[in-house]
Image (cartoon, rainbow, N blue to C red):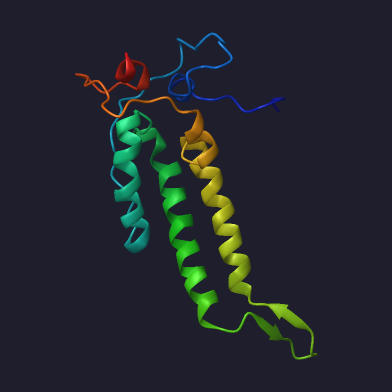
Length: 155
């Protein structure tokens, strides 16, 4: 088990500007940057979120076939969160059990858990608000011939 903070992918180090001036990992795998096909389970709201987020990740050089499952997990958590919030909004917020004890609507717990999962996936892609404040990109990024990651993208 590793100690300390989790390692940050080199692409995110570059986008953040490498504030700690730590040496970059030149041996880190650089898979082809492209939007993978969504898995068959990604439908409806999850697919809409996939189609919204994937191009953003592509423009930052942060998506490849290897990130397919992480993006799918994020999109499924997003869809679950939307569904749970809608269900929670429909009914009473507090229920009474048969014994008379009040309990919070179970959809509240589902929504909270899905939101927590979304945040973990989003942080991995650098998409949470805290991570975005550290990304140093350009409004008009330089074009590149072969998508091979943020190093080439921002060079």
